[in-house]
Image (cartoon, rainbow, N blue to C red; front, side, top):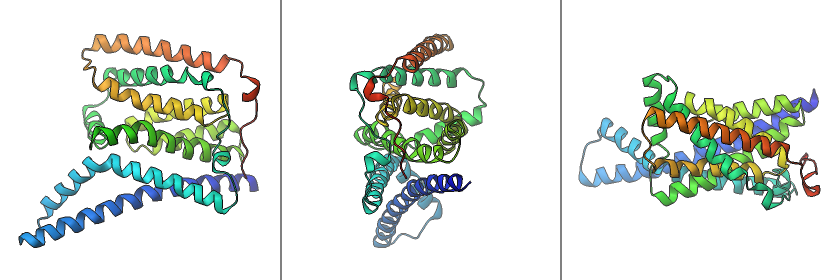
Length: 285
């Protein structure tokens, strides 16, 4: 029981660092924007208008959300590095990074693409209520603002790496020390899904979270789920530019991508690991 509480406490602590960093960076951005907005209105002699201020803040967040997430992600990693250094521990070891043959990682790239196509097609075909779809599109619009360079760096590189460090490298590995591995897998995937904040994101976030943990366990290195996550997120930029339309096209894409994803995943899970990949997952204190 003592190990259980220690494991859960450690997992909550690392999630708290991640969460509070996002909130803190967002508030700092908002305070700077509000100060500039108020100063500008004061200089122009305009009276404060609540509706105008709300619209300005909404537009600011929509345009800068990728930058906010990018900064908060980097700050989270820096904070964790400093925390582990203060405890005289290795950040890479504590977060589950270990040596892995790069050539063995290649199936994760097409797997990420196939999963993205499968989920995107399913969303188009499933009878999801219109109001749910509309709210999903509004939420998705928050992470498509700003320059394309910032979008790509954040969504396709920084966010996948940071989320894997937190949810697989820290939360899952800590939970696994205090409870059966299956329960740790389910809890870490559930937290990962819930963190996304919308019922559509939460639904497939849980499924993707399960796959990411299984890939982590298979390769015994955090590099593997990071690459899969990067491939999944980066595929969105490609799919957005294909301009796919029609239920028949989506049905074909769903069938093909599902078959491809299942085939690749089975291949990954059944391939015998090399000698260097047979080391156990790091078991941090």
